[in-house]
Amino acid sequence: MAGKRKTNEAGSTNNLRADVLCVLGVLKAATADQIQRLSSPHLTFRHTTKETAAARKEARTASHRGALNDLRRHGLSVDGGRTRGGEEVRLLTKDGLAAAGLELDRGPEEMGGMPKSAGRSGASHAMTVNETVIAMIRPKPDLHLVAGEPAEAVAAAQAWIDAPDGIGSITSYATEVALPATGTWRNPGVGCAWADLVLIAPEAGLPLLFIEADNCTEDASVIALKFDKYMRHFHRKTKDTDGQDKPMWRTRWSAPDPQWGDATHPPVLLVFNQVGKRPALKQMEKVAALTREHWQGQEADGFHLYQGKMPIVATTLELLREHGPAGPAFWRFGREDRQNLWDAIGNPRRDAALVRRAEEARRRKAQEAAEREAQRPVCADCGQKFTDDRWKASIAVDWGRGDSHPHLCDDCKARALEAERQAEQHERDRQEQEHQEEAAQASKAGGWLGRWRS
Image 1 (cartoon, one colour):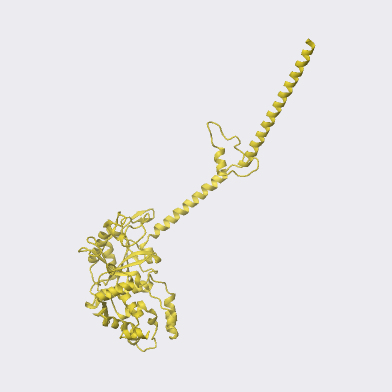
Image 2: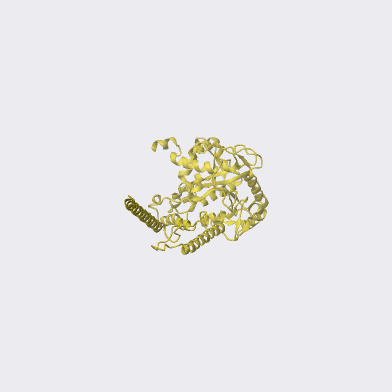
């Protein structure tokens, strides 16, 4: 480890630099504080004995600031200005983006573009995107790395560990991903949609989720226009490797085919951060009204069908931080109550209806089976119930002839047939015996008559 520290002038380890590259490779622009909370969450619960919040922050981010300085010396990162709160923003260079791609095992076309307004005007949009990722992941500290801290710090770390989990890790996300309606993935056409975030977490039941972050500074009509662009991309088809036309997005990401009543297109989550003057809740309502054609389903027997639609879900960064993805923080456009993320993007009323239908079908089948069982014939000899095959054979008609023993089971019928066969054989033997005896008597009588004639 000492050798590695000599290579890195600011004293960071290669592992620490790799963590920083991974975070910046996904987020593109971030502060040391955000990088620390994502990659080393245990440090959030250290240095609690320092007197001020600024001193605690200085201590817990020191190692990551050192790693960022080393990356800068190697030409992999640059300063990107400061946030409105005065924190330094760090960006990757072209070489840094390539190095991050190696750490993330992603090709250049998968790395995405640079975030909007990065390093300019406080990078407020990029910071909101980052905070959204942190609130979605809810990074858990390693309790062993908090050992020795004051009891209050350990208790706080344990409480965060016990809190509901988030979704995925930093590698589950991608930022500034082009969704071309024209052009290619590598060279998207003008006016295409750019997703702020793409989440891929099939292990959490979220194979694909697009996320848009807004600081309540844009007009609702501008936000709604993004969904027009999304829908243009979702409608675009292209040939896949099998030569078949498929939605273009399916040639890059995997997601289950829609089931009956499911939405055809992937869901989009809107996260509003109350930075601007427009109230977040009013923004949600306005965007919902302006995008109705994209998300509104059709009523069908107590639930909605969403064929050809895109689920749009909204929340605030404050609610997301408080509840996490598993809490009631999400409003699905067209519904009344807030739900957890999975219910919000899903169709729980349809699922419940399908469960009810399946249960009703099961009950009907059980009732029909019971009624049929009550009608099942019983063998008149041994009292055993007929098997299905025997029952079917007992009522079958073959060229006007029915079953020879319709009231007997297979075994009893076989015994009865055997007894009849033996009886018939005995009768044939008896008749043959009588015939032989009559022939013998006739032959004897003929012999006596011959003697008298001679």
